[in-house]
Amino acid sequence: MKNILVPTDFSPTADHAFQLALQIAKKENVNIHLLHVLGFNFDSALELDKLFPESPFGKEALDHFMKGGHDELNSYIDKLKLDHNNVKKVVEIGVPSDIIIEKIKKLDIDMVVMGTQGATGMKEFFLGSNAERVVRYADCPVITIKHKINIDEVKRIVFGSDLNEISDKVIEKLKELQGIFQAEIDIVRVNTPNNFERDIILKPLKERMLSKINLNKLTVHTYNDLTIENGLRHYAQENGAQMIAITTHGRKGFDHFVAGSIAEDITNRTTKMVWTYHFQ
Image (cartoon, rainbow, N blue to C red; front, side, top):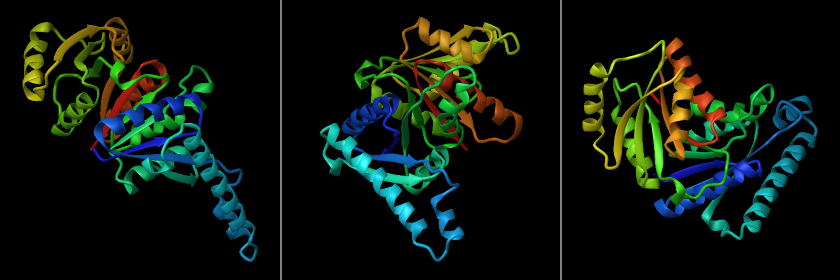
């Protein structure tokens, strides 16, 4: 791992994400890219140049907004008394989720750490939508966080799995995750009314999973609940886990929709940190 991306709107949850990312970066000796995405009343500042090609207004407006964004980032770094050389600052104008996904590719990002303000009801669409889109479409691990937490407070991670298969990519990322936090990992298969499996079937799957991943401080469990989302959240709560981890596969159609929806729902509705990895 070489690069971490931290989107910020300077909210408390974004600050919690940045503080955690700083701890990870120090421990792993990696770069932090702090991204601030500016909103704009027009579709984009560039549209002004198209509407008024002979006028400097479009460029001036763009320069004005970009300067304001850089000033905010610099003030934020100063407020935290950090060395500006230790943080790579990025300012863009656009839709936050789209810019984040774009920067993951352009900056060769290995992990995103971002705050989210998941809620219920109509506010959920506005508060959690950026994080949900990043969770679904980012091709690197994404950690979402709602509350302040230190790296050494993460003692247990719940990883949701159906136990049927696990790719080498996921195993590599799980090892990386455990290396960062030095936490125990509980692999949890949630039995639901619509997807219930007997212990006699699950036992060899558990043994195969343990053998294939081959990590220290790793155990495999089953948990019965009405839905996968509820099962993972309830298991994490009952067993004192600080993080829930889940992967989604880059397949198409209904399976992709269901897997993505589970990850998004957990991201938005739990108070725990959530690690998601969308792999092809």
